[in-house]
Length: 150
Image 1 (cartoon, rainbow, N blue to C red):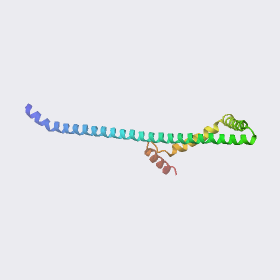
Image 2: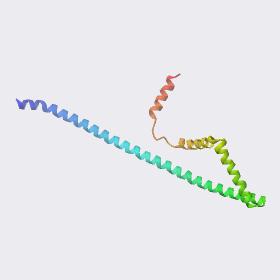
Image 3: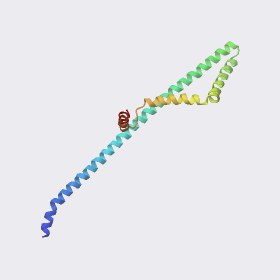
Image 4: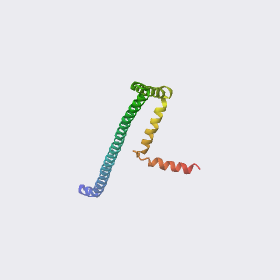
C-alpha cells in the first residue's frame, strides 16, 4: 500500500518540482535582468557625469582665457589713459576706480542682477543636457489629461 501512495504522488511531485524550477528560473532571470538594467543605468549616469564635467572644465578654461584677456585689455587701456593724462598712475587709477564702481553697483545697487544672469546662463546649459531619468509615464499622463480636459 505504501508503494501505491508513492506512485500516486510521484507525478504530482514531479509537476510541483517542474513548477518550482520554472518559478526559480523566472526569478533568477528577472534578477539577472534587473542587475543588467541597473548596471547599464549606472554606466549611463557615469557617462552623463563625465560629459557634464568635461563641459564644466571646458567652460572654466574659456572663462580663464576670457579673464586673462580682460586683464590684459584693462592694462592696455590703463597704459593708454596714462599716456593721455601724462602719468601712467592716473591711467591705472582711472581703471581701478571704474572697477570699484562696477563692483559697488553689482553688489549694493543690484545684488540679485548678477545672480539672476548667472542662473539663466546655467539653466540654459542644463536644459541642453539630456534627461537622466526618462519620464515616459508622465508624458502619457499629460496626453490623457490634455485629451480629457476639452
